[in-house]
Length: 293
Image 1 (tube, rainbow, N blue to C red):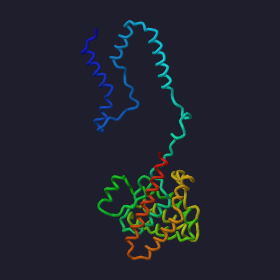
Image 2 (cartoon, rainbow, N blue to C red):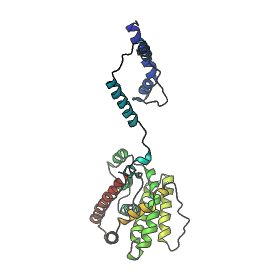
Image 3 (spheres, helix red, strand yellow):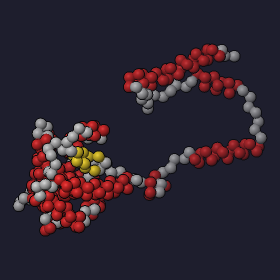
């Protein structure tokens, strides 16, 4: 007969040895960090229980219970069989779109609207949407909670190229160039704001060059070079995003920018553009959410 106090003390010591790495991680980081390579040793109590089980006498099982046990075991084995991917229905497969994939023409619109804001306004990318954050007391607080960074401006590279290559060619005859010219002015404001950050300024110079390449009289097809994110802008995705901008909407924003450029007091008109883009952002956000379901 084993001493109960001896077993309890041994069991506690064994538990301490097994959980010592977890406890150390808790003290260092404030929470337990699981270690996938830590394999717990077999408990001494389990060994004693196994020995007691081997020495114990086995009672005979009635035929009725034996049949039920056999059926239960076979059912459990069937449930534990691994499910192959081929047997899954196609609805389970998901298309995951990263949160930095943006609607190309919405990026141009936000840059164009930014040109009408005061110096100090910034762009913020959150959940596939580009937002304008005007200068104020709450700007750094909001950017902190959204984890916004000036380095996120690198995600504008592909959308600017895609928007230029599609919309300038398709709607050049109805005066869409005015929006892209204002977008270039918006880049100038960002360049002025980030003039102390050389890497960011060089990135913005590249965007300015891409816009100027499409707005100028001569075109250089070697300016834009695809990066590791370019492949995420598949032709199907770009087609769906561009389809949100119908010709009627394009004509509307062209007329609004034409009026704003001619009006010295255009704050109310800029608010109308902000409200219009808020509706377009809601449509874009819903589109990406449906893709990620």
